[in-house]
Image 1 (tube, each protein chain N blue to C red):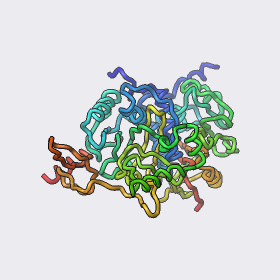
Image 2: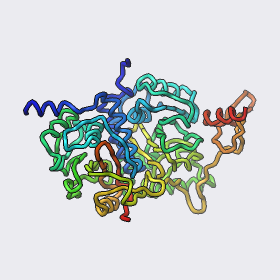
Image 3: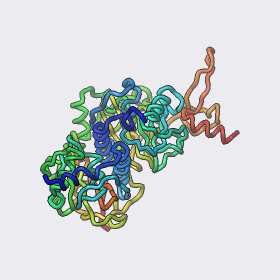
Length: 276
Length: 193
């Protein structure tokens, strides 16, 4: 017997979040306001993702949490244990076994399936926020589909750096309508936003939920002469040898030594097992 | 209120509300994010003529914060009592409803329902349409949630085409029959074959 309601939140709160999720699904890329609750963790630790997961989980689910691709970081472990305790769901570190995956800043390397839901933790949901601080204005810009400012920003990148220097939280246009912040995933992951899985985004502090339904058109913003480039470090993984995965640079000593390893720990471990 | 009415109103809710509602929501979520797919949604036993699926949607999504419109064929004292007891949702006029329950002919004219505003397209109604049958054949659906094309029996095509032209405004629709539910968000493009 648990001292918590199923999946921690009370039923009224879950209904409110569920209604917001459904409207998010109906209008892909549009940020639905919701009455975000205080969660037993600080803002910035995934309170939005946790609330979306709590609203989606069923007792039959198999739950996985990754933080920058890793299953074994403090944030991922604590959120996994949180739902193990409050929703009694089974958990896994294997992407292919999971039915609900909560993620901070990565999309798993393995292609997701129709039977999976990917829940993103989002710090700043508004892609225009650093260009226009006023919510009243950015709301109007979305309503009028006025995204010129974003293109100016990308153009200024090119004028200054010779290329679009945005490397993460790279803005996308969803279903030819809304410009959306895909959360701070590396732009390497942007092509994977067109997925067979349902993708839900939760921003707790900013009180927004949005969604990308399966097979929805998601285009990374670019210019004809400066096309989008999902770049990555030009090395193979030092542990599994993968050349197609996103890599973390790890400093290994005090004299500048470093190695590049897969950021997706399950993907890397799976390849090492297969090779052994 | 007679004793028998109290009996009907109290019965037929979720046996285990947190878990039943979680399963029902997942069915509703899958239905809306994959238009043209059919899902079992159960756990509710609302008074006739309301279907099990529609009852489960009401229990899962409605509460004191959401206005519910009952179209004439479903606006019975028994269902009003059941909704009041299990959800506390106020019964409201079509024009201000967050959810509307009825048969297709019942719900017309559709331009009564909220479609949201340009700034807040989420402030739109969700229609729950009771059907005699739902099948994965008939009209051709394309758009978000659909790989190539999906097929669904619709009561009418023109209304959903007009609704799609308003995107990102528009109402969202669930079709219910027995314990089955299918979803049709405003983002779906509909063609007659």
